[in-house]
Image (cartoon, rainbow, N blue to C red; front, side, top):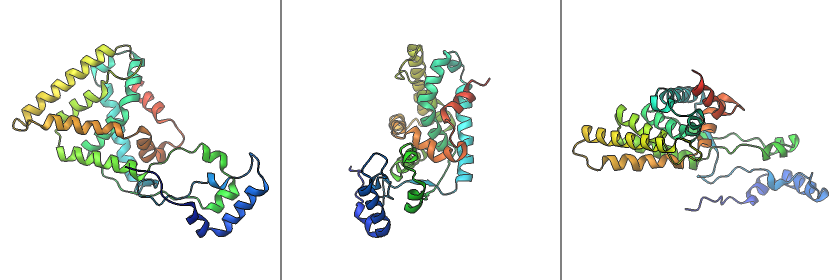
Length: 258
């Protein structure tokens, strides 16, 4: 599928002819590195998949998301096997799994949310403030494409209607990932993941003895978690709350605060 933006810059020229002429003159008169480059100004993309979005009810949804995140970290802290691992391994696993684990929490808590187009600064404001340097450092914003993946994943889990124990064992298979680089206790982690998978399979057979394909559907749905980036989760649900803070550092503080 082609997710490239098909919007043309000519639409900006037609909708903002005066500003475009000003910028063109600036480009022609100052052909050096300090010249304000019109092409560097991000225009509002009208492509459905690539347009940037934000939460429609941030105060309510961010509060729900924060509660899910706290439960996520507490779930990890309360696992005896997790606490037996070296602190650096704990941090590496946290870094690897916090986002998919959080998504499982959203699914389990039935958190619904709506998004809307991100308000954009006017072109004139960008010109007057000369925000070129800050734009280069600007974080990647959530897109409708990313949000659509997240919603699709949540709907898949909701359709499975997992029990609390199924969610718990699935979270275990997500946390204990032996493929995370630089783990000192990779063999131990691999054994824990296998135990979690066996426990999940046994629980599925106990709760749904007539559904022979349920376990495979659960694992297939869980594979969708990896397609959703931690950046999307951070910017969509937590940036309005934490500001410029590093979310991973905050999670680590929560994890290692005994």
